[in-house]
Length: 106
Image (cartoon, rainbow, N blue to C red):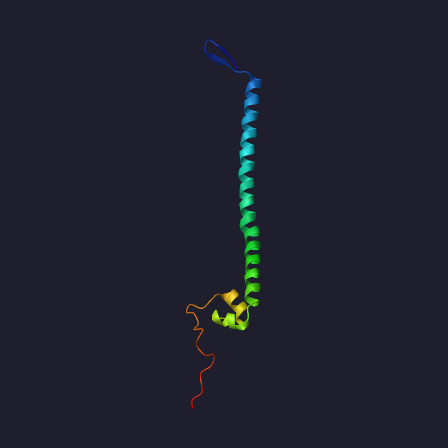
């Protein structure tokens, strides 16, 4: 831009360059925001569920590797492991020392 007596003389080419630079910066900002949004969506809907599933499978394998006595100490049976993973534990924990069946009356 040129100035004369403190007033700007507008050059059409300078205006075009400035507008192009502003437009390029606005597009770059928009694409950056869109990229961060897509990254968040991919992480939340793809990466995190895959990690959670892998963690769950490791925990399930660890429980399946325990012997029946260890499972009993946790209040689980071998057949109840999958159910506990799918539905969670009961609101009131099982008493591990309670007998599995009621004793017979003498």
